[in-house]
Length: 296
Image (cartoon, rainbow, N blue to C red):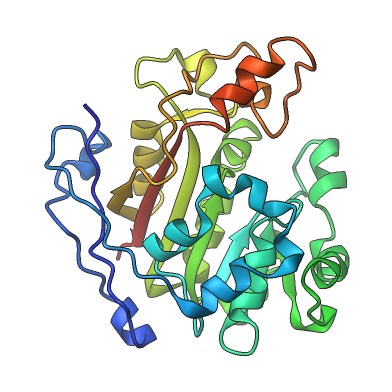
């Protein structure tokens, strides 16, 4: 039986209060990279943030709301303790599903920063997809959110200004770690992310979750899935400490054993008509949700 470490989330009045979140229960064992099996279960006492609720209900999210049942944005952001007033980096924002939440939430009170990978040593496909983020992303984000393009900060990790180091409260790695892993970028990307964070900064991870006994050929990122124990070990090896787990984004219907990996499932459905209804019945992937703190 998987057990869940969670936060007793309260209505937090200031960034100072966010600096030292209180765990609801012992999280021993994470240092071994063994995950959190075998510990006492706890529940999240989630309190809705009115500002976040307004953003989630905005008409611009009409199409996005079909994914809310699987991605649980309100509960996920509350678990990561994201709220106005913070500086938040969204890593690999892609087509902007979370951008349309985060950028408006932080506009005028806080700061949203989009960050893509260093593509100088990446495959050509990645260079085309992620390259020149500073020049291309703000206009996209402005179209998605209605915010001025010049209010959207965007970078690749190789173009980050030094003055940003030590200024970020949260970095969100939502379904992104497998891309770092399969493209041999993890060390330099996590090093850049760690440098960005304040000393009391946190990384929120949502990642497609493989079974713990899945073979290495399935968990090296090329199928989209990673073992939870590997994620914890990799982040801890790069200067972070796992401090909270939640099953907010778990999906027990997902066997995490698809021949083409996570892309068999919605929203990609890359197998076309083959097994389409069965994949739709599963829904989006089973996902781990883990909070890491930058450690000295």
